[in-house]
Picture 1 (cartoon, one colour):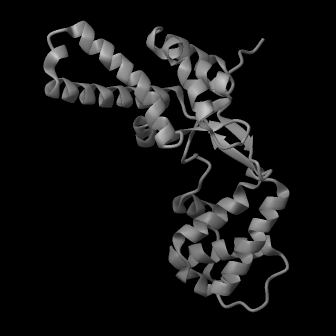
Picture 2 (cartoon, one colour):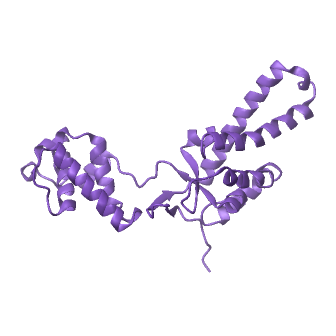
Picture 3 (cartoon, one colour):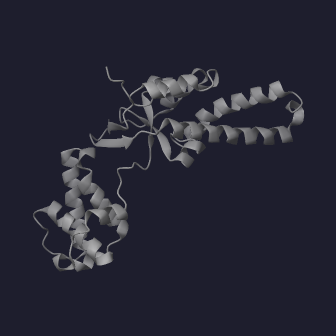
Length: 246
């Protein structure tokens, strides 16, 4: 029997019935984020000890306070930053709810309350084993709260280099809308992502987005008649943009 491995992506249906696909954060990213947070709390604890030096001569007291601060920090800072600790912000990852709802304090609390078992008392072993063994890379706290941790910049997004690779065969004589070269690059990257990632959203939402994008670009390019085949029109604009700007 083949060994079950964690999926690289997780699909979330939002409260607006929009299907959004996220790339799961790797175990390594989560470990590094936790390490950054621990170092930050250590620095803060050292500053506290410098101001209130009573615990400096007592290592047991110093580290007990440090462990307590790390544990408290993981709830306070994540609630404050709405699903991201400082380490998570640096690593570009965040906590999301798997049911598509906005995370509440109770969700963060459930995730946090088992942190000693997941991480502190087991020296991260339970949390790492759980993330490696579950499909959505969840530690025990995630499973209890119905959450997971995802990347904020999924690899499915395209860069201008990716678009260039797709359109090397386009010739200057095939350009229909030369004024597209004045459109911002970020807009064209958005259009390419919209055309390519059709499985990330429901058909209705994708069609509405295509319709709105077409109307906006027609307005910017001063095209009076909105094309009937909107997808073909947007593809043509991407092709033309590459030819006119490369």
